[in-house]
Every structure is written in C-alpha cells, then in structure tokens.
Length: 377
Image 1 (cartoon, rainbow, N blue to C red):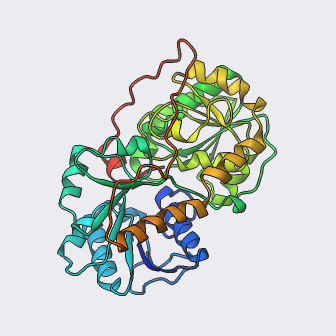
Image 2 (cartoon, rainbow, N blue to C red):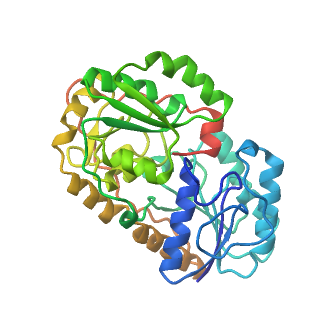
C-alpha cells in the first residue's frame, strides 16, 4: 500500500526528548515501511524519521503548540499533497474536520490520542464521512459516546531498539510536570517505601514550571533526584537501571507508552488503576496496580522480585511495533474493500484487576482541557 501519515506540527518526528504522539508516529511509519509499504510522511521540516517526507512544511516550534492557525496551515498543506495514496493516517485533532471539505477522498484513519469528552464528540461528529476512528485502548473507546470506533489498536514499540537493563536500587519516574502525571504521588510512594527516586520530567512551559515550584520542589528530599528532561537513549538507561517505574497517574490516560518502554528494558511498573493501565500491566507479572501511595509503596518494595526477562517478553509478544503495524494494515485492507465494521479484538481486553482488600480504586480526576484535547503520554 501507499500510506500517507500526518503528524502534528509541534515537534519533529521522532522527538528529541519528550513526545508520546511523535514517538508513536515515528514507530508506526518505520514499522509500516519495514513491512514493505510505501510511506509518505507529512511532518515538520526538522523531522528525521527515515521514510519519504513531503516538502513544504515549516520547522517545528513547541511555542506554537495549540495555535489554531499554525495547525490548520500544516493540515491544509498535508491534505493538499496527499493525493496519490491509498489511505491517510491522521494523528491530529483538527485533521478529520479539515478533511470534510475534500471530495473523492481516500479512506482516512484518525487516531484518537486524547480522551473522549463532549467537546471532542462534537468535533469528531463534524469529521469527513471518509474518516474511520481508531481508539488506542478499550478504556478510551468506552468513552467514545457517539463517535463510532472502527478498531481498537494498542501502541507498539521497536523492542529490539530498547536495551535491556540490569535493574538497580532506585526507582524512576518519567513524564512531565503536570498534576495528571502524579509526580507528587510518586515522590510520596518512594519515600514511604524507603527507595530512592530518580525523576526525568519535561518542564518547559510556564504551567509546568509553576507546578514544579508549587507542588514538586517542596516534596523533594535527600532520597529524590530531578534529572531534567532526558533524550530517548538517556531515558532507556534510567529505566533499565531502576528497580521499577513508578507511574501513579491521576487521570484516565488513553495509553501509557512510558509503561511499555520501561517493561522493554526489563523494569516492572507500579501504577494506579486509571485509564489503560489494567490493559498494559499484568498484575504480579509485569508490575503491580494499586490506588494509594501507601499501597503503591508496599508494591514498590516487592518490584525487584519480579522477573525482568518476563517483563520484556510480555512487550515482545503484545506490544511489538510489527504487531501494531499489522493491525493497522488489516484495518486499511478492510477499508479499501469498503467493508467497515467494528472490531474490538485486536487489542487484549483487560482482565478484572484484583486488588487486595483496602486497595479499592479511587475515581480519576478530570483532565484539564489542554491535557485532554492535545497530548497523551
């Protein structure tokens, strides 16, 4: 197939550091190319993803993130250029609406990277009829409401590119400075467990800096170390040298890419039962799912007893890039045959999370508008 992929304009593909959507786009583009498909990527000028890219785009500028005019210009150019493809994969929020003005269009697969909310429902209802929506977890799809989900496809990574790690005495946190990511809770968890915590987190914009000063800095102690924002290579080293990734997210994150990255290094995950967590973490095998810092701390003390090779094997089996690409190709084939149907079998449904007595899940806080509409882990 000839597959056009539209990336968001804010960051290069792949991102130099933090960027979950951008990392996903890079992985999908390379996996489809490796599988023998012709991939044409619409991305910022400074992207380095090793597939053919459309010309005429501006360099990325994170300061423009969320600026409507910048995104619309990017999308208009992308859709105007992607005329000689079999299918278009759109990773933006506004793209499906921009595509509504097209005639005689090829099938469009829009990947919903953020949570479904009434505002998102309204936007997607205005999408082109040629658009088929993909959810990235069963939890996310359960909130789709009137938006018809064509398929549920879990993310994948190139596991062979992730180095195994030996583990270590410290735990780690990887994310960004945002209340939804649960960094204060991670710090408290590690403190209660008596285990050092090393923190790698994006902190660029004013809101992230304010959150750090108000909520994170006062919680830091002698047993915690803030490393700043790390490159992909540095991130894998940190994860691989940790006894566990502490991921106490405080919202229904559609898919926690950071968790499968940690598991690929052999490092188990200790996390809260929100969003996609129960679909990714296998209780007692690749990590532990608990609801409070106190119970997370008890689980963190046990994390070193888990089999690191099993953690990696689970990712190789369930979250490999080749599996993900195959799932997308199956959907593309179905759409090209004009036989769309709902398929919720491509991603493993979560089994019931059995928490010890007293570990009942608490309700996840509502994500902020900017978090919900534009970014994911």
